[in-house]
Length: 195
Image (tube, rainbow, N blue to C red; front, side, top):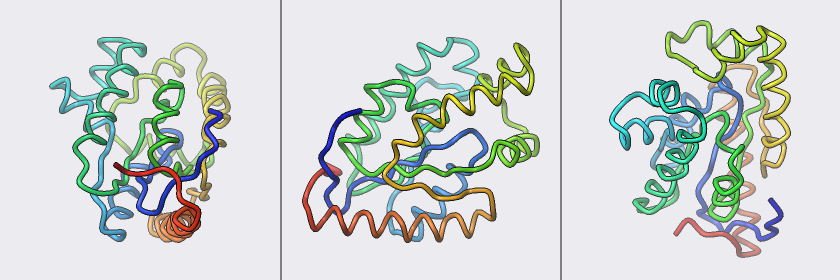
């Protein structure tokens, strides 16, 4: 990602982070507090393909899933009537064209939660996480830690980074403050748009 423009005030807010970082939970609250619509990209994929995103990923494989993820994001942005809060999938930024679309259309915020916190949250979540499940089967905790490390490189390109190891409420408050400030700075300079 080499795009150097800055977003315009009112740009979409995209949330990235590892599975279990709190993107969906915090994103819903963030959207409500900011008066924005919320899109969970996994839910958008499920609506698009007619089955749960995790089941689709397991059935179709990661390449097909990432293509559908990009299409679902494009659909959500095209349908937007104003700036959105979008919870991206944990591996969404692996696809360079999706990452570039995010950079052109808004601000990217990284919910940076320690791996141990993410794993604890995932254990409490009954939902399936096919990529994490596969990593566990193939190499256990070391494979999951490797995946976490690989993805952190992409997450680190975010405009905003917020510690997400504490309460969802604290994460949301810090995120709202950081994104609103970044949005204001961008508005003063001009740049990316939500349209």
